[in-house]
Figure 1: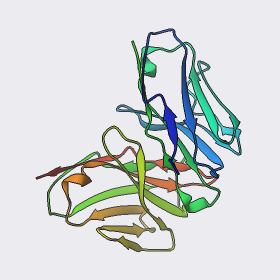
Figure 2: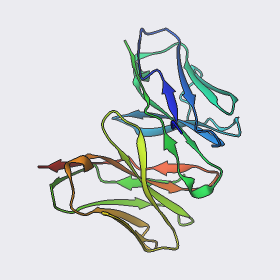
Figure 3: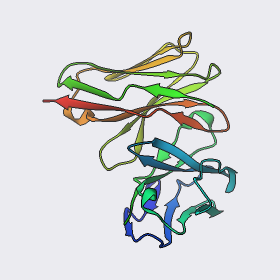
Length: 114
Length: 110
């Protein structure tokens, strides 16, 4: 298995532009998580899906952020419009149905908003 | 909500042992995890321990769990330069969610 695949690896965009981050979870994993990592705040859970359904989006910072999971093999995190304070590394992770399986993380997307 | 605390930085000489500590708040935790993050990479699962265990050993890694004090530690024996990374502990707190600490940066000095 190729693991959790995220794209792009790096994204530089101008303030006000729309940004879409993509994630392909591991086949057979039924939970998917989006995290944001910054020096100041560490790892923050933004949203997670179980069987493609959003379960908890309380970590989404504001309405500019939205996430979708149209099927078991694909999810997107969209920021519209983007702001400089959104600059961070965004990680996607997936986990199997077994409770002790732990999460498998993707390599992340480093977003820079200028 | 669930809270996981870690110290921020540890410097250790190559060949020595490293010990990273973590405290958590949820007394009903069933699994606790250690993840490693190398520069520019995602978090990689290192090991985990079930809450009915006190210790788990996996090659150079030893995990100790003190449920009474809600304290988890990771000992790395014979620390090598490749062990330089940020280490996160995480607590499984239900609904398939993990609460992560802020991470502990380990720097190995050759």
